[in-house]
Length: 442
Image (tube, helix red, strand yellow):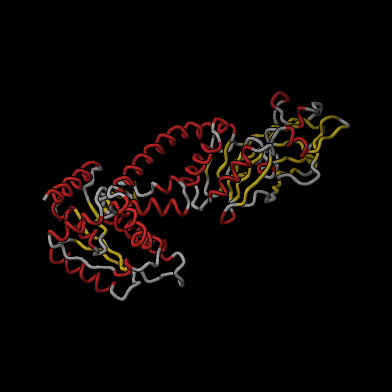
């Protein structure tokens, strides 16, 4: 009776804590999820929750398990959603991840379509301990180790796991005492996945060493989460000072604010940064290489990442990009006519001498706006020139930005380079005065 009271009280308290109103209960038919369904049905009105299920279609018994659940819901007047996964990968590699992606996408679709605010899953203390150990084995990334949280945002609402404080054996005891019918997935006893091997072989031995092991894993997870939250709060100020800009294909910013962090702290910073902002995996080795590049003496260096992404350091700047940064472009320009270039308006027009960007003795026959080319030179006096490449180095322009910077040419002579050169600063004699209006990057 004490376990029953504790379970009901914990679930009730968790729902209240997260203001869960319209619930979607993920149920496979196994003992864990059937216990969760029983608890919800005892706490919440039938009109305020529904049962959702996915037939992964990987075992002969799966159709019968769906039918068992359908009849259970029909008998108790629970609203029931189900679907079947039919486009599995051709091989077993990534099968678990693909199944999870399909499952949660279906959950998200139903939540959005029928206005449920909370998805409930039956993850328990054993699942949390297995998850921590699996993540430690696979990566050691603390942001992944603590990924099984009691609550997190999901779709248009949230995902809540109210049973994390209870062990598998406690849920079985509750099911046995209340005679809760459920199905048994026999593949859980086959050592075909890492999770099963840990569950069947490793954890029983660990629990023999200390019966409080699961509660210790839970405490470790809670404390590590709290420490990460503190670190993220501190890192937020640093990231703000880095002036990070993020698009769908690139992330860039400044590196000097990171100087207050040592190597280990930078490992923690970049681990969280990549987890939040990149959809590709970044290995511990790659993070180590990136930090070496950042802390090293070379002002220009790069690291190749997955799926064509690169980390590029150039002086005090970094760029993460999955696109080539040296695509050539060239536009014909007419005086007085504006042109949109990469979402920015460019306009060259006549003006007074005081406002002039460019002073010239005659109007050019050909006006071109383009990015750099090999051999570009800048006029710095009547008889002296400077290579554009040298000016870029002197101005410490990040190498990855150099091919993006626009140049204006009059009859093939560079007369303006955005932010670093304008002919009017060197040659101030002439009869024609022109100014450039170029919208700042957003």
